Amino acid sequence: MFLRRTLPQVLAFVLAAVSAPAATLVDYSSTWSYFIGVSEASAPDPGSWRLKGFDDTAWLSGAAPIGYANPPNSAPEFNIATQLPTTQAAGYLSVFFRKPFVVNNPAGVTQITLNVNVDDGYIAWINGTEVGRWNMPDGVIPYNGNAVTAIEATLSTLQITSSPASLLTPGTNMLAIQVFNANTSSSDLFMDASLALDIDEVPPTLVDVTPSPGATVQTFTTLEVVFSENVTGVDAGDLRVNGVAALSMTQVSPLDYTFQFAKPADGVLQVTWNPAHGITDLAVPPNPFVATNWSFKVDSKISTVPVVISEFLTDNLTGIKDDDGSRSDWIELYNMGSEPASLGGWFLTDSAANPTKWRLPAISLGAKNYLLIWASGKNRTNTAAAL
Ligand SMILES: [Ca+2]
Ligand SMILES: [Ca+2]
Ligand SMILES: [Ca+2]
Ligand SMILES: [Ca+2]
Image (cartoon, rainbow, N blue to C red; front, side):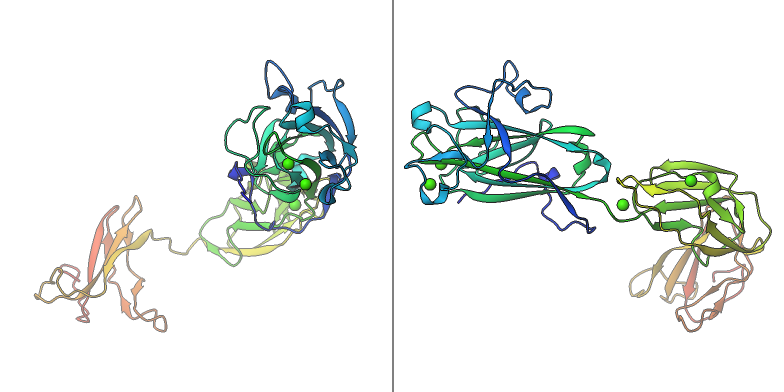
């Protein structure tokens, strides 16, 4: 058996990250409109039959499974509900199928599952976008193209988890399937299919906040929150610091918001949500945001020296030598800031148990300047010479 899948960006064979119930929108044994492929199903655009607006009133319709077996009622095809003429009798290699389905709120759809029980191969489209093919060659296949191999009816399952909502529109949508026989002498053809949507039932939560819980910041006027998914209903009045609502709110993206507050006095700030925040995800029915509170601290006196360890060497065997001609390990500090920074009150250590192992002299490191410190154990503190 030869399996082929295309459009990998819309086909992800992974478990959905969220648990969600599936709503079956097209069940097996449904009634389909169909057109026996003695020509393309639409002209001049051979693809327009896949769209919702195409007029298929002249097409036949019948309940699935739809197909034929030669001889009739052969074992694998015993349950065919709508009999087609054989390819030999009617001179075709493919059959076009259309089935409308209704989606009230595409934004809440987290996965589309399409099951097709087919002999011999198929290509499927939702609203004109190909969502997958099975036992078919690549590329555009004309009405008289054919499946790769002859098989008995086989169930193939597509799970579309990457942006499934982008394939759908609110209201009526169109599932189009073209079934191909493997060759003009094939003894059979078979199609039955189901389509199910997983609906989001997972409430939004916070995945990141700034300032973070327990943080100490020097100044505070802006608070940023990132939700686990796109949400709606976010207003300045939804978020409070020490009981006072934000002055304003800015939407960075549908899941990322900043809130502006009046500058508070130093101390611990409690961040809470208005119980009537009204924030929900985009599912139908919507799932309310599960609010969590946190606190952080403002201390205007804390140092915010923008000095980082920019480079270090821990095993100096062949590198540079210090003033005494010996090779020690070294650490390079860099002032990222735009002002000179005092190193007074800062320490270097190589022991987590001893964070104040070596006190930096209270020198000033100029803006955008580097400082090399030898980890020599010589404890040099003459700021006029190398450290
Ligand atoms: Ca057969
Ligand atoms: Ca066949
Ligand atoms: Ca959700
Ligand atoms: Ca709100």
